[in-house]
Amino acid sequence: MTYEGWILLTACLVGISCGMVGCFLIVRRMTMLADAISHSVLLGIVLAFLVANSLNGIYMLIGATIIGLVTTFAIQSLHNSGVQEDASIGIVFTTFFAIGVILISLFARDVHLDVEHALMGEIAFIPWNTYTVFGIEIPKATGMLLCITLFATLVILMFYKELKLTSFDAALAVTLGLPVALIHYLLMGLVSITAVGSFDAVGAVLVVSMLVVPGACAYLMTDRLSVMLLYSCLFGAASAVFGYYGALLLDASISGSMSAAGGILFLLTWFFSPRYGLLRRFRTMKTS
Image 1 (tube, helix red, strand yellow):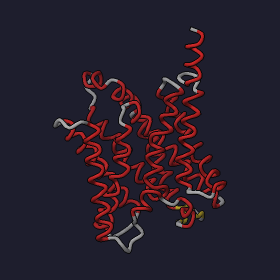
Image 2: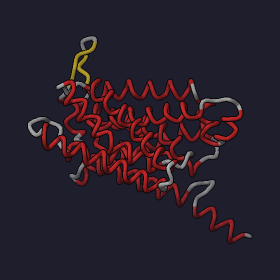
Image 3: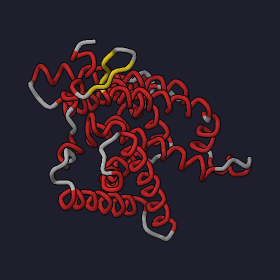
Image 4: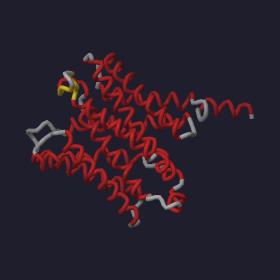
């Protein structure tokens, strides 16, 4: 595969994996939690490096997943104690992110683990960091994201009914005896894994965008969760492709262009959605 092909494939995997997981955050009205986890996992990445003294992807994944779950638990605990949910999210993720920044400046100055890289990433460098599988050189980030995408898809398929029921009617799920809290933390674990898998490739900014925008576009297109998941994959991949070629045309940041492309797609969906678009609402008002 060409240099350009690896970049596009990696970006599309980010859009697909984040888009699927983000759908459940949207229907649960927890989109700001995506921002919180995407930033706080920096602390998990730094702690994993300090403990293992290695930038191996598996250590990063474990550390980020743990901190992602801790972030969710801390936010929920503060909210249950009387702090407003948005305030809880702001307090926890800014604190965890700040601690991660401080630890980097103190103990990892000479390591390729800087704040700018974590926020913006550099997807253009992905094809140069490879390993060989069956005689084929594959970028490490692409291989990891492929595994994460397959894992997220498998978990969603296995627990689709439970995730759907707890997302739309948690009270009913409790009466039916479903482990609502366990399913909640399973979803948060998926968010953490997906976020850290995308961190090194595209940075936190695009991770947040991909966790929210494709699902938001899909939400405007359908009332069925299964169809929404499919639409989110399409919108995530489209944001990656259009953003990449937009970056080439403008000679701009690839990750930033992909985020901007997602925003443009959302605006177009918001205007032209056949179910909830502004034009449809305007026509309905005009004919009534």
